[in-house]
Image (tube, rainbow, N blue to C red):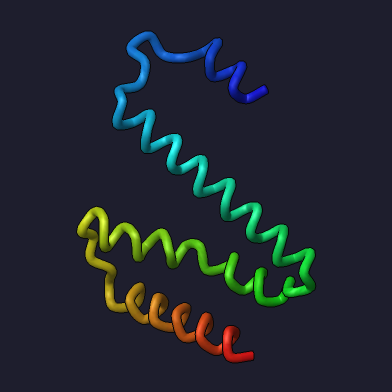
Length: 93
């Protein structure tokens, strides 16, 4: 249904190849993340899956630092470090 709306309302200029490929990759990664979440929830690891899912803003900030060269503030860096520590503690059990 969403694809039909997008095709119907698409802008006149269209997407260039780079934007289209980036959108496709983002969609595939989103599909993979959603599938992994549901599979882990079905396997009985919902507590781990919930903690890992709650860290997605930290992943976004880390990717912005690596890919776009954005510099996190001191508080943001501290938060990213705490998130990484949480992943280690949860994985250790």
